[in-house]
Amino acid sequence: MIAAMAGGLGLAACGEQKQDRHTLVIGMTQYPATLNPNIESMLAKTYVLAMTRRPFTHHDTDWNLVCALCETLPTLENGLAVRETLANGKQGVAVTYTIKQGATWGDGTPVTTKDVLFTYEVGKHPASGVADGELYRRILRIGVKDARTFTLHLDRLTFDYNAINSFQVLPAHIDRANFKDPKEYRKRTAYDSDSTNPGLYFGPYRITEKKIGSRIVLERNPTWWGKKPYFKKIVVRIIEKTAALEANLLSGSINYIAGELGLLLDQGIAFEKRHGKDFDIQFKPSLVYEHIDLNLENPFLKDRRVRTALILALDREELSSRLFDRRQPVADSFVHPLDWIHSKATPRYRYDPARAGRLLDAAGWAKRDSKGFRVNAKGRRLTFELMTTAGSRTRELVQQILQSQWRKAGIDIRIRNEPARVYFGETVTKRKFKAMAMFAWLSAPESVPRLTLHSSQITTAANNWSGQNYTSYKNPEVDKLLDAIEIELDRPKRRVLWARLQKLYARDLPVLPLFFRADPFIIPKWLKGIRPTGHQDPTTLWVEHWRAERP
Image 1 (cartoon, helix red, strand yellow):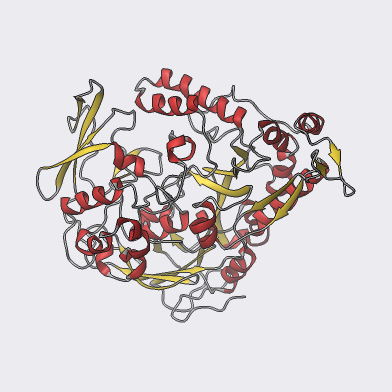
Image 2 (tube, helix red, strand yellow; image 1 turned 120 degrees about the vertical axis):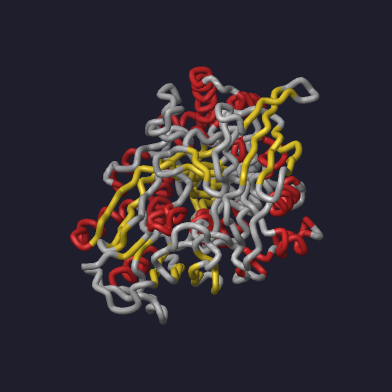
């Protein structure tokens, strides 16, 4: 068991106070690969940075798009968004935002349109390595009215034209010097080289200490313009093994396990049975899509028959029943049944080992070696490496079940895992996984998966690993559908396009869908104000409303 950190708030399992009631110690399983808000899209980073900054727009707990860093959400109806006819005759849109009054970096420098312009400069540069370079490429220009008001001139009018959730403003007065060589920016950004610089943050908290792989300490930001947060200090401790995470909670070494990055459902169910009376426990269905990215450059995985056989050889219903008490629905595609765009016509792959075998036979894997594994005409065994984040007991159990089920089909699975900061920072982002990478995507309601499916978003050294198409999936019809969905403002017509996209996704299987997660939020009875969202925006976006209420 990991020892309690000095200065933390120790609590017994029943939640009795022992030390400083204004310090909150949170445990979570992953350490961010970077703290730069625009580079990579790791949940651990999002969770921490949501306490130190606010996006211009995001989705609230009721799944509505709202302003955070802007004063008013621009719409076509209120006149802050205006249709524009572009020089090429296509329809664009001009969207005007005003930075929230009082928004100030932690060193006292106001957040201004200078920061907006610098962020745009970084985002649109092809070598900068930002995760959502597509958003910045769509901005034709930015018109500046004054220090707080600016207009984005976008190259298309999309149904979510006013959602700029990925436009994460950067401090020009600090990070511009690190952008002299854009190719080196992701290595030199102050968010990693000078992480405790107060001028990097403008939220309720700022980072005052970090120990890579171990902890991040946050303290109240005196320049925060909003509600004063209750806790003076928040310590985020990284405990990669979920069994140790639970033990630290019960011992009082940590006060709360991040619901988004803590115990998985089976552990939450077991915890509830043992300790439910001492905690407020919520199981939140969410748009968290657990899946396996396939490396389509792998010669064996290029054959769609093999990919189809892989999913037919899995009894995902049995897996859900065995590990999750059927509380996590099996996924047919990337779209959750809770999302209005979900199509019931999406092909479903039920467990069918006979059909899987016939497909493998037809694909040239009919023979077996002495150990019962399938081999091709050249005697090469049908072998795949399956990777995920190290330390997650549930994911490791899932791996073992998948390995066993595929073994029955004659498929050899080799398991190799890595710490999350390496796995996401290098292996997945740079497509270094040989065959299979298991992890979860978090999305917003009706989120267009352009970054993960469009052929232009394949991560390469040439684009400095920008984008999130880690499978190297290419389908011209899918590219056209993604383009068409975005600019279709009529919901019924858009639903038809969504249905077609889900059907193609299920047919091509660039990814093996597993299930949609329900995350357990195990909250001490004295800790109030935490409201799970069920989507990609974490609870920490409302951290200033968290408080301790004790008898």
